[in-house]
Length: 175
Image (cartoon, rainbow, N blue to C red; front, side, top):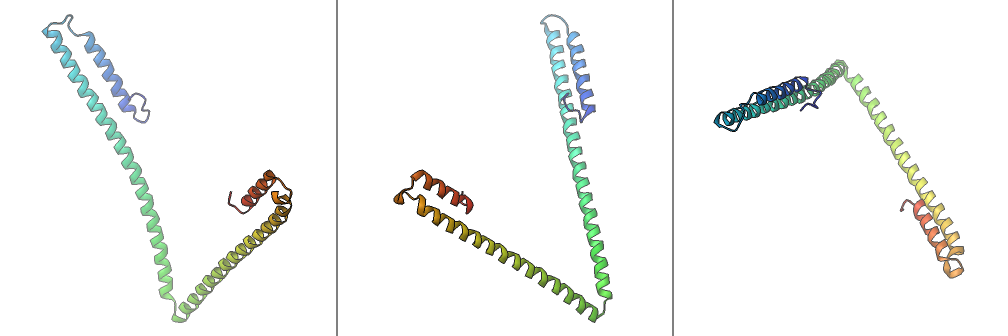
């Protein structure tokens, strides 16, 4: 408990508890008679109650901290949603103020942007596919040429052929 720097009040309470227990222990009557046993039991009860109070304080402080963090996060989210809603309302008001011809022109502009983006994505996909196919053809052609020289059936070694196969697999991404 004393190593909880985020809760200085709990640390102070813990130190006070330890001091009180030490003082009460020094004040216990000597011997092992009935009075000493009662005093010792009373001390143990006080100790347990104090520890329980401190634990409750720790959990209350932790819960309060967690709730505070949750509230801050929720406040941020509420503010963001409110700002988005305000922006949408502004756009909606602008849209509602447009004439039918202006709305049609805006829809055509948005459709043109969407079509342009779709075309660009398709061109990128085709270019990537073409590059991949071209790379694959180059790797295959190089592999076949070297395999014709390095294969054990034509005088090459097993080791050289294994290294060639590993290189081909690495280039094709098989690893």
